[in-house]
Length: 343
Picture 1 (spheres, rainbow, N blue to C red):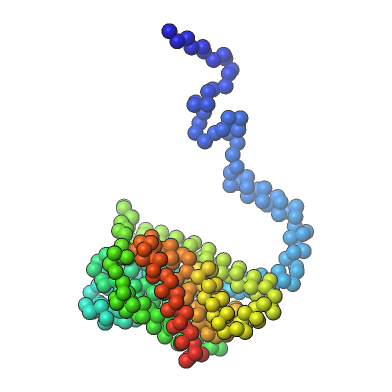
Picture 2 (cartoon, one colour; picture 1 turned 30 degrees about the vertical axis):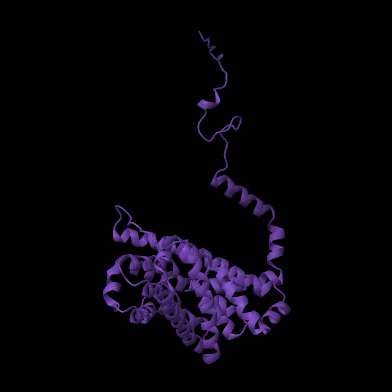
C-alpha cells in the first residue's frame, strides 16, 4: 500500500498547481506596458540634457528636416489611397472585372493593365484582388497585369508623383508609360511561358459575421498601420542617406549610371514603401539621375519584400520564386528604356 504524506501547513503548493506561465519564485511579477512606459519616460527625463545636445547637432537637424518633410508630404496620399483601395476591395465584386475583360488573353492583358491605371489600389490590396480574379476564372495573364499596374500607375500615385516632382512633369508620364509597359510585358510573358502548376491561388474566406462597413474600416485600419510603418522606415532611410552617408559616396554611386540604377532598384526592394508615398522619397535623393529615380518608382510598387511575401502566400512559393526575379529584371529594363526616351 502506498503511503502519502500531507504537506505541512503553510508549505508551498506543488509546481503542478501553479498558474500557467508563472515560474517558481517569480512572485507573479511581470513587466507590463504601463511599467515599461513609465520607466522609459523616467529615463528620458533623466537623460534630457544629452538628448537635447544630440538633437541640436547639425547632422541630426538635417535628418529630422528630411524625415518630417517626407512623412508629412506623403501621409495624406497614403491615407487617401488606402481608403479608395479598401472601398474597391470591399464594395466592388471581383465578378465585375471578369465581365469587363475580353475573353482573348492577348487582349485582356492590356485592358487589365489600363484598368489598373483607372482604379486606385495599393500593393496590399492588389495581390488579394488578383487572387480573387484568378479564382473566379479570369485568365492569369490579365490578373497578373492588373496586380502590377494597379499600385504602380493609379491616379493617386500619379498625382503624388506630380506633387513630389513639381519641376519635372515628365516624370509622371515616364512612370505611367514604364509601369504600363512592364505590367503588360509580364502578363504576355506569363501567357507564353507560365505553367498552371506554378500558380496555386489559396482560398480566402470572408470575415464571418462582419458587415461590409466593418470589413471596410478593418481593412483601412490594417492597411494604414501596415503601409504607414513602411513609410516611416522609408523616410528614415532617406533621411539617413541624406544626413549620415558622406556626400562623396553618394556622388560616386550616382555618378556611375549602372551603379546608380542598380542601387536604387535594390533600395526600392528593401524599403518596401507604399506606392502612394515612394515619390517623395525618390525626390529627396537629389544626387541621383532622373532615370535612376524612375527605376526606384517602377520597381518598388511591383516587387519588394512585403510583396514577395504576399505573392507567396496568395499564389504559392513556386510562383513567387519565378515571378519576382522576372518582374525585377523587366521593371529595371523598362524603366531604363523609358527614362532614356522621356527623361
